[in-house]
Image 1 (tube, helix red, strand yellow):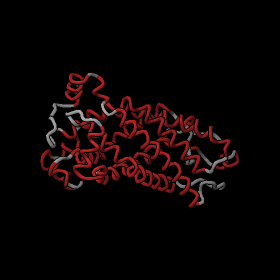
Image 2 (tube, rainbow, N blue to C red; image 1 turned 45 degrees about the horizontal axis):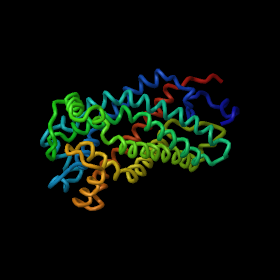
Image 3 (cartoon, rainbow, N blue to C red; image 1 turned 180 degrees about the vertical axis):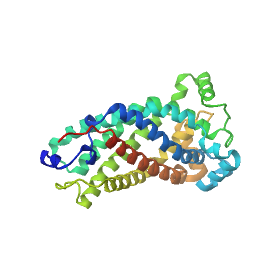
Image 4 (cartoon, rainbow, N blue to C red; image 1 turned 135 degrees about the vertical axis):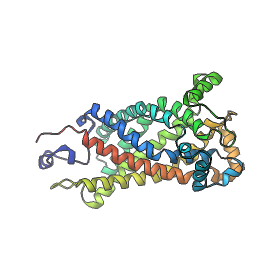
Length: 321
């Protein structure tokens, strides 16, 4: 937007794009921690169901998401849907601070980098958001992978022959005792291969789809008024759904392999996991849990991005006109 457009907009909160430099970082981190924790509470059971489906063996392989959900409730009740939740929520706060900082700073730098090339807005957004998502994921993996390893073991404990634990600390102690610190980073390479491209694809899809939708609404380059809050939320939510659909289809196979590597007590190699999946269920075995992953990715992504964009508007420094 040019300076003429800025003068017509009453405050920074009504703009669809809010730069990192215009945010109150302390407020963003504090309020964001509570907001994203609430979203995690709501959507965590879907992750448990997806993980159970990915590690299922024998008769359990034939269960769909609904049957897996009923089985968890039957055996463990509602607490079964939140196994490993304490571990996840504890590690999620520092991981998200690292993620958001890397995301926004990389996006800002990337946009400046591509500006001279005069690319279309969807292409610019895809490049900057994708690079930001990739950078953010790489930076946060050091915290996220150990949390992922511990929480997934808690999610599947007692299921399909997996060991039972007393809690997250017990899991960590047993892993360190058996394999040292590196045991907490089991599957790190695959996690990077899964989450970094996944993050890049998600943010690139989100950024470009937003611009395309805005163009369809003939709003993005509107010089007379800024979009309503309802319109902004609608566009952001739609972008989140599209990004979730694209990402889940692209990354589910590698996520299935990674999950099996992290929870298997026999410490198989990646190729062993691949061969076993093919033997058990053919190539479709790589897409076990696609339904829950698609739902989780779309629901989590949409909830997260709507909350995050609202949080950015909430934490924006008001620009005096």
